[in-house]
Amino acid sequence: MENKLRRFRKEKGLTLQEVADHCGLTKGYLSKIERATGYPPFPTLESLAKALDVELGQFFSEQNQENNGSPSAGNIELSNGAVGESIESNEGYAYNPLFRSYKNKYMSPFHMSIPKGRTAALSHDAEEFVYVLRGRVVLEYEGKSHALEPGGCFYLDSRLPHVFVNEDDEVAELLAVNFTYKRF
Image (cartoon, rainbow, N blue to C red; front, side, top):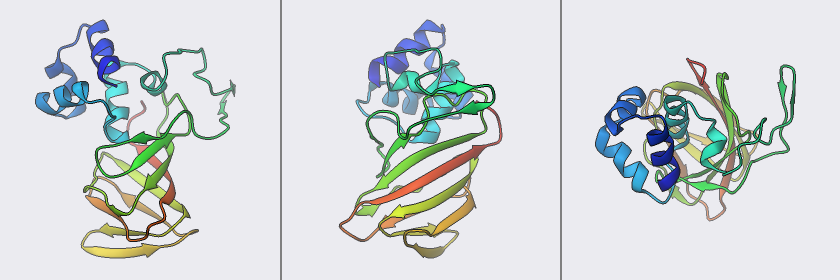
């Protein structure tokens, strides 16, 4: 991540402050993301891709295929599942985009893994749908705890802080779809 983000920013002739302002981040946090060896939370990465006018998949692969590895025909995007390796965020979860390209889309589906423990309090400018695929997870939202098992799901305003808690040794696996208010 370290070299790609900085390289994309410099190729566009943008300063840290300009990108930070566009994404609603501080210059210091953006600098920290550029120096990190891991990836920021998925919504932050989406915001950075939009600010830099690059496909999200370019952060994960050196290849810049015409359709970014997702076959498409007309108005349909197809994928055979997660694209690439799971990405460890610094927020207590891992994620894997289900498509390489989110350009001109409102929704961003991804696979989310939550190991035993708590995530950081997450919030981002979107609405969020989450479906529990495997394991159990507790959602903490607006002062209440909601226990979810496989087949359980929720839809919420993700601008409000929310935390995932996995009290089991088994990794909880979720299908998450964020709906942003602006196209990428």
